[in-house]
Length: 170
Image (cartoon, rainbow, N blue to C red):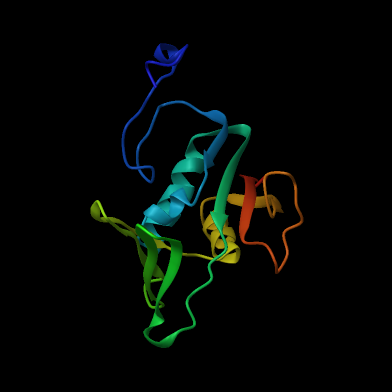
């Protein structure tokens, strides 16, 4: 980031997003592209909402972008899908879901003439309604929800949600 134009003027704070403090408030706090799923317990996800709420200015909003879970309805909650299939390489999406912890262990496996590569990640999946409850625990409420960044309607066909939370006014 420092190498980009103006990057030196951007303050950076490193830390756990569920606990780190900056000492400032902001009009916008956001987590995009399933970032909240990197917190692997419900308690940590709730702490993240609470931390976001602490960092919001009075009229600020917390924006969360996350996919809508589609838990594998396959035996053993496991599956393998082919992502790429060519003469000299294969890409596989290998997953296991634990409904008790809501953790999806996924691995993008690449096999080819140049070898084998793994890209594993674990994510805790949660539905929008669970995030809404986390927001209420943190003193926030849902302001709006869309099915994409272009304002698409959020409905049963939506694969992701953009949820905007604001402080609960007393």
